[in-house]
Amino acid sequence: MATPKCFICSQQVVGLNGQDTVLDTFFLHSTRDDKLALSEQAFGECHLLCLTESAWGVFWGSRIVANLRDVRKYRVLFADDEYQMLRNDIAHETSIIRWDGWMASVQDRLFEERRPVADGHLLPVHHEARTYLNGHDDLITGLRGALLADGTYPLKQLIAALGLTDRLLYPQAIEGGTLRRCTYSSAPKNPIAIDDNGTFVMAEISYSQFIPDDVARMLIEHVGKSP
Image (cartoon, rainbow, N blue to C red):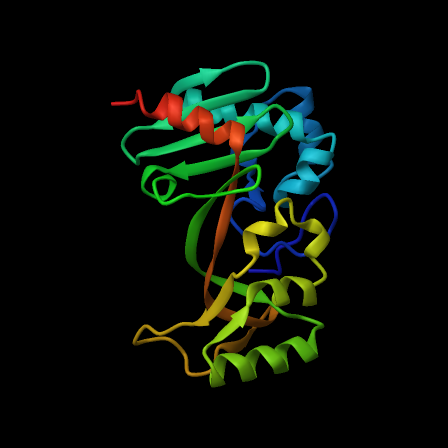
């Protein structure tokens, strides 16, 4: 796949929970606004910060809500002028969409592990990711050396080297985050590789997802009432 780029700011999207999202065309309807989104290529990967500050936030928030409610049949837990909260009871997961396009999906088990911080809570996140490093030769050298020697590399340092610090909606969520060399049996010996789209690192990433206080209170109140 090509290096993911934000359709709003054109900068790289790393794919961090709570910082980035993907807005696919299957969410679209057939109205004039939807056709405009297609014609202007206002879809795909984006930073949540960019989305909420753009003219597309309200539009995409409404399309996500409609898909979860009407297509996927998520149960509506709560709705007002600011937030919509929808529940997937089978997956034990709640989706929250704010009027301006901010959105989060929260699994029950991760919410139970939340850690309070200023103005919100941090939820643990762990996943494997492929991150392209095209045009960042010094980063490639340093990242390869660190992962081969110590097995880890600071996520905050990676984001800074990619020039994405100002695209983070919640910078505090990546404090202490790390890239860790994949350790499963079939993992490549060299964590840096090349494909048709360029040079990338494949690593296990650990960081946090930030949930604002008002959203956490809604989750406590409404998910607690869920079956």
